[in-house]
Length: 160
Image (cartoon, rainbow, N blue to C red; front, side, top):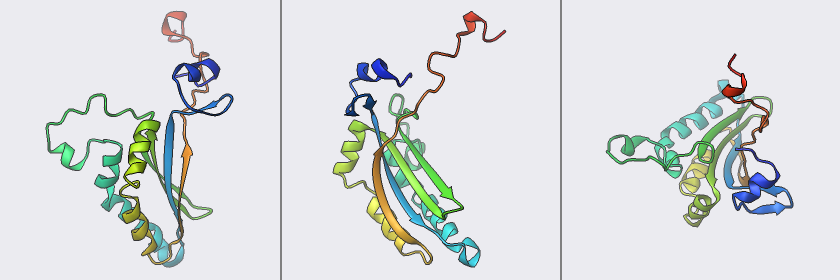
């Protein structure tokens, strides 16, 4: 979807300032890890993420764990452009980040549940030797189509 001017307003998205609209919010859990002991703290952060994968993915309704063993139909419940879980590792500044992105309405519901399983994840991060600066942040996050309407349709010869 084109994220310029009138396209955003037509989707009734909140505006932070004129021309700065959003429809999705993200919650970031982050910490600093250490290169000490062959990156032991980074390895432990990754293990924690893997160990809590099912709980975290439940937030965005991914097909995982218990859901994989059921016959629940998730059609229409997953939109990867507005719902995702991402992990970022910054080697230069030793960042480990988990970002959970949701549509604004689902984000509000999750916020009312105190961002579950955030507390468990953060407390577990704090218990890892070599991990420092365990923090959270909330911000808007939009997918921006830089090609907008510049990509021609196949009928106009782009596949020639």
